[in-house]
Image 1: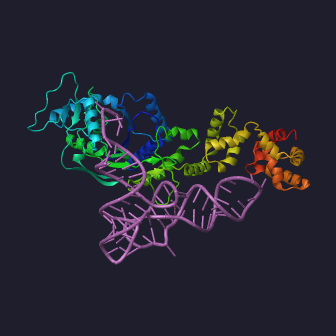
Image 2 (image 1 turned 30 degrees about the horizontal axis):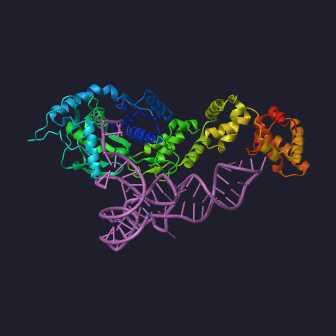
Image 3 (image 1 turned 60 degrees about the vertical axis):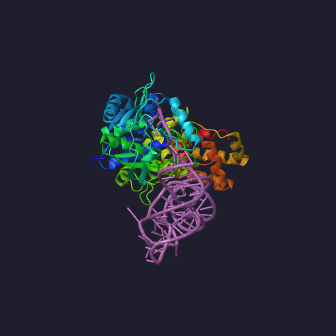
Length: 463
RNA sequence: GACCCUAUCGUCUAGAGGCCUAGGACAAUACCCUUUCACGGUAUGAACCCGGGUUCGAAUCCCGGUGGGGUCGCCA
């Protein structure tokens, strides 16, 4: 049996971190088993689905480089097929027409809630042997309901949570087609998973409660029931549920915030899945290792600090030219006149050991593109008369350096230190502030070398 | 409320009855490195939710409690 998995988002917003992990796991499972990964857009909620959201999801998948093998399929384009299946079910008696209005349903629900009962459809239009149905009211378009079994249990061996059994008495006859004839989610999913030959449904665990309904419909259709793996949810950094109002952001925000795509994927892979003590691994490695047995059943809290660490590891290993491109792009976005020169690439090499994000790297390289002045406060703190005097001395020595190389520059600094009878930081710190606008940097002689004679002497003027 | 899921350091997790004096990673703390800040290195502190069983033996299996979460739509 060839593995076929799918990622089936509804296009009502951006691709968020939870969706991204679901997509990653589905993708990885298909890749692991040489199977097929399908992208399906569940857009039957016409009121909330937008083309922008479809694009946002595709953009997110592209950025993460989770390529699909089939699709994207759109449910709105499969209406004829759904309607065909509904007609078959009506004919077969596994579905029936229900004329209960929304108002009646609301009243029923309110009544049941008042009695502290589980709200459910009471089956008033459900055909039963020997039962007389009321006459269909005029002027009301019926919905189609699935005739759910009333006895027995629905059970499946969830690949993450283990065996789950639900009594059919807990399930009511849910609506598979609205009064306007459009099919509903739980029905479309079933038809799609069936038609698309999905073997493994890997999705969020908010779907656990839909699963028995879907299995019952699948059974009514005589379809093979796929394997299910329900992933627990991802909580925010504060342990709270992620929502539009609270903490949920697009995966593209991580790009904007300076995270490398492979770092985000590595982090997500480890959030709810493990392979022994392994923390850092490539996607190739992940695909070889990925299995459903090591997925955590409980919810996981997102941890930005760990993501930062992983990102820093990937930045350190990343190709300088690639980093340079990212830095220039980000600097330009800030309105900084950055150019991808060999000098700037050397600065990238100098700084990439110390950046958690590409944005931090870009900020650090800002003074290598244009002169950055320290705030008045920082200047006042570091430019004492004594400090200025050392900078004047140092500038004189640097001007006389024949070969602009770190060892020679270091020598010039040391001579200045000796002549003024001060410690190294008394020169190095004001020098950093004068050159870079801030008191911290990598080894100052390296910085001097990369910055170049011209800019160094220019920035050291006026002391 | 009903049903379902879930529970190991602050966080992500290892753990399939003896390998557990509970391991790793992030974070924290200390020290080392150092020309500042980082990086890196070394070390330290830090957890099996509670109560009953089962067993020679339980973090691991069972039951109950408690906490957390999800679902109860002509949304997906």
